[in-house]
Image (cartoon, rainbow, N blue to C red):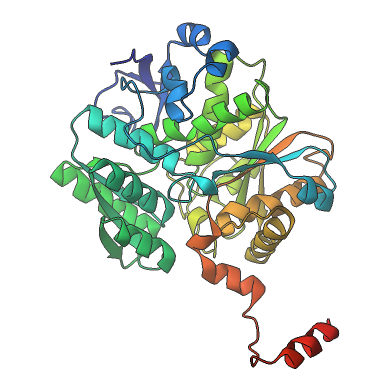
Amino acid sequence: MAVNHLKEFVCIRCQTSHAPEPSLYTCRICGGNLDARYDYNTIGTLLTSDRLGRNPDTSLWRYAPFLPTGLDFSPLSLPVGMTPLSKALRLGQRLGMTDLWIKNDTLNPSGSFKDRASLMILAHCLENNLPIISAASTGNAGTSMACLAAAAGSRAIIFVPESAPRAKIVQLMIYGARVFLVRGDYRQAFELCETVSNRLGWFNRNTGTNPYTREGKKTVSFELWEQMGYACPDAVVVSVGDGNIISGVYKGFYDLYQANLIPKIPRIIGVQAEKSAAISNAFHGDGILRRVTATSLADSICAAFPSDGEAALAAVERSGGTFVTLSDERILDSIKTLAQTEGVFAEPSGAAGVGGIQALLDKGKIAPAERVVLIVTGSGLKDVDSAFKVTGMPGTIDPDPEQVIAAVKEV
């Protein structure tokens, strides 16, 4: 077993410290979400650029000292993480930016950023002999958990709103998960999963409830630091639903900063759908999270009351970032813009950052020359119906060359 440098979990709300335990979820004092803290002084001596440069492991385990596990290596052969970072030349030209980058997490095994969290959950369960993993999801977290559980021979039980995109439901089924389609929204699926998991002793992966999800998601920031030559961008832009991804992005940079590996934390900027904007409303208002009637075609960021909203607010505030909201129409436009400039096909939530960056430029919240990273979180193949709303269906023709030639001349 490797050395586990995890020291404690600290409540985000009341700052109470908790010793790590296999089935520890939320704060036992106030019920707040927990944040992992490490032996940063030791880690800073282990994750030097020289050591990383000589490490052939491209999985999340290249950052093992920053992970809350004693496993020596990833429990899967599937390649989670180290997704491509590329300079977005054509999209940058379209937006008027000179240093825009795309971190393409659609290329994780299940097509989603959520594989980072699921791998950490899976490692924890295998290390502690927890045989059944449950989760509530609008689709991506569930399909991710089902995918990785299948590869490890573990059992996944997933609760999904019946309105989830069919492509995500079929992913769950083909991976062999036990799936419950819930008549209700994500919050109702979430609460049902919590209740049943507590009664039956399943290990609950639910975002916000489970502190290990953030520890997987933060690895994207380690990769950005390494891929950018052990430096940080000026800002990172990512879509936001329940708040766990954006709090994870911040947490990765926070860990690097605490270990004296970076001089400062970049601005973390969140993009929400305007009719599912509980965190943005709180940020731009009085700081209090309030339930909204959430509706958006971007199902992955549609959350009435974000389960990790407090951590998301803290992440953006402490980094000097901000939130911006978009209409569903602008989110749909973002899918087309991203695909037709950079060849990246994203689902609505994954592409939303494109419209978010344009809005931030218009408001002067991002400067055209700043180094900005857009994290694309999910593949467009997960929600082709939304993409068809942008493209429409092509017309049909007879197998007649003259029809093609006539049609081409009309263009």
